Amino acid sequence: MPKVSIIMPSLNVAPYIRECMDSVLAQTLTDIEIIVVDADSTDGTREILEEYASRDSRVTILNDDKKSSGYANNKAIDYATGEYIGIVETDDYIAPDMYEKLYIYAEKYKAEIVKADYDSFATIKGKRIFVTHNLLGERKKYYQVLNPRKNKFVFEAEMYNWAGIYRRDFLNEYEIRHQETPGASYQDNGFWFQVFAFATRVVFIHESYYRYRKDNPNSSINNRKKVFCMCDEYDFAKERVSRYPEIWKDVYYAYLGKRYGGCLWTLRKLVPELRQKLCDRMYDDFSSFLKNPNEVDRIWGKKHLYNRQMRMLLMDKEQYLSDIEDSLFQYKKNIKTLLELLKDKSIVIFGCGNWGTELQNLLLENGIDLASFCDNSTEKQGQEINGVVVRDLNSAIEKFDDLFFVVASAAYHRQIAKQLSEAGVSTDRIYIYSHSNYLWE
Image 1: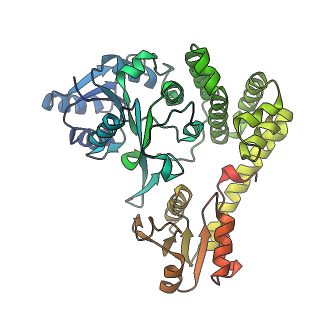
Image 2: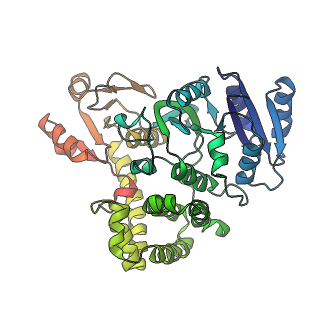
Image 3: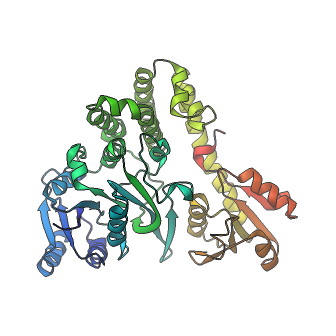
């Protein structure tokens, strides 16, 4: 029995498939099987895969007759014989020791699921720029066995299935599978919720092995057939999990929180003329789920931004949609203002979490370089992010002249702004960056 079965759905990824396959075949854990399910690629992908299969007996190619990402994943899971299942999308690639490390941790903790952080990347002006994504906000939550039904913060982790492994007998015990809708229509959401609803032994690893190729993150969804795909995914997850009434009761409010977050993400991505349709569906769905508006407090705390958004949706859906559209407009306006403001300045981004590194990408895309990152974490100080050093505040002020600080922190922006002022930085040299999700604050 192989230690890990790596399943890889593919369709017309010829420009990327060699890098992906090379990274999988180069795994330091050699006791693996590689199951590629190809949906009749027409760009040469299939021929490249057959070339790899002819050279390495660990590679098996199956056919995806439905052209469905969910069907392809399910077919590979059913075919797999490994102790654990891993997923790699065929336009991405992975670090050589990814599955060795994940397997070691899985065995050490006797885990049903092991999830690791990951890097997204984009090519900007011929150079790959990476952003590390931490699945959990606090370091202390990593490297311990978690039961999501008791540790509800697990449901707030980023929703990706590929940066981890899943024990195969656990998936089969609960018949955890993907929805087999056409194409690639958010089928990862339903699978993700099932595995965390049913698992009792989950471990997060504060190390990054997966390299996720990021297409245009600002592209709009303009396919009318996909307006309700996120809703359909959560209907699918509800049907699967509610077969176990006690488990469903435990995860019900976590389910509503994830469903709302997924729908809100879709709503922001939709072209304007399709937003009303989804908003109406969200209103109908959540009005049926929440018989009493005060139940919203059981999904999120009273101070959570989503709490206020949900209450607005239930009270006045037209005002809710108007506020969403206003926030998107304001965000784009703020970004335009920021880019104009930063021209020809010596810039420091204070905060090198997800917001800070994504902001660096935005600046690089617009031809704006950084002098430095700043962060109060001694663990991060001295590291480099895409060639830019992370410094403490005093070191940055001593090294560079006439600095302009952009604060990129959701939780600590007020404290950081105060820290900068106390260090002698004038208020006209401080800009508080805000992500679009937080413009309702």
